[in-house]
Amino acid sequence: MTLSGVVERWEGRVTDGGEPDESAFLPELCDLCGEEISDGTEVSALVPDSSVIHGHDPKLDGKRRLTACSSEHMAALVEVYEQRPFVDAELWAGKIGRVIEAHRGRISPEELAEETGLTQAQIELGMSWQELDARRWSRKFGKGDGPESAG
Image (cartoon, rainbow, N blue to C red):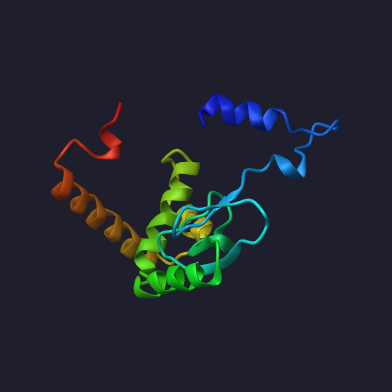
């Protein structure tokens, strides 16, 4: 389906009060097999994942919502995430990035600590994680090919 098709599908499902009709929401997809789940039988779970940073709510950081079409697929997904290490510095790097982005790069170290809820040592470790990640990107894809180079 094209983007315009999705927009048309959405616009066609608004109540008289301008609110989305319950049926306006697109069906869930199984995170394992990609199967469409439109009958409300999806299975959901939250798993720890240090790479997840919520757009604005720090209480949701580090938690990934999984959706599956069956309990068997959910068990397989959970097993994958149980094998992935939870890296605090990765989570801290994301928290730092969210706050810096919100302030468009103009924030004092004190404000950064206050808004992230991190200590100075945690901020330093988070920044180190970010630098290591940038180096890994550079080694893998070459200099100038990262997301920051797009102009």
